[in-house]
Length: 189
Image: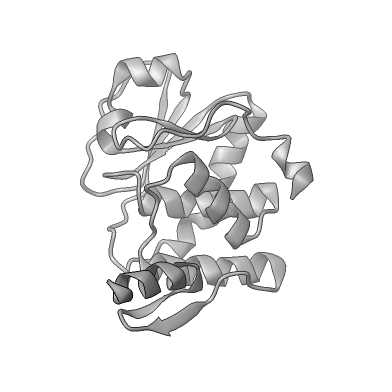
C-alpha cells in the first residue's frame, strides 16, 4: 500500500481528543457530533460535506456544506454494510472535486470509524488490517463494535477475496483478532 500512501496528508498524527477533527486522508476527517457542529472547526478545515452516521446527533446546517445522514445505531446487530459502497463513493467524489468530507457519529469511535475503514479499503486498496492501523494512528480512540467488525471482514473479502482480520473466541466473547493481545493483558491484571 505504499502507492496509496501518497494520497495521505503529511500533517502530524490525529489528535486523540474526542471533540476535535482527526484528519485521516487529505480529504477525509472523523469527529464527534459536537465537533461536527462547530462552525469554526468546519470552516478552518475547509469541510465541504458532513456525513452524519448516527440517529442521535442533529446537525446544525451551515452554508456551503452538503449534509448526508446515515441513520444507523451503534449496536452489533445494526446493518451498516449496505451503506459502505454509497458512503465510500460519496467520500471519493468529494476527494475528486478537491473537497473535504467529515464523517461523524456521536463520539467518532465506532460508526464513523467503520465507514472510514470501508472507504480506505475500497478507494485506497488498503487491507482491513492496514486501514485500521492507519486510522488508529490518526484517531487513537477508534473502536468499531464487534458487529461492525464482522461486516468489515465480509466487505474486505468481497473486495479482495481474502481477509487480514478474523473474529476469534476470547475470554470476553468473540472479538477481532487484532484485540487479542489487549484482552490477554487485561486478563492478567
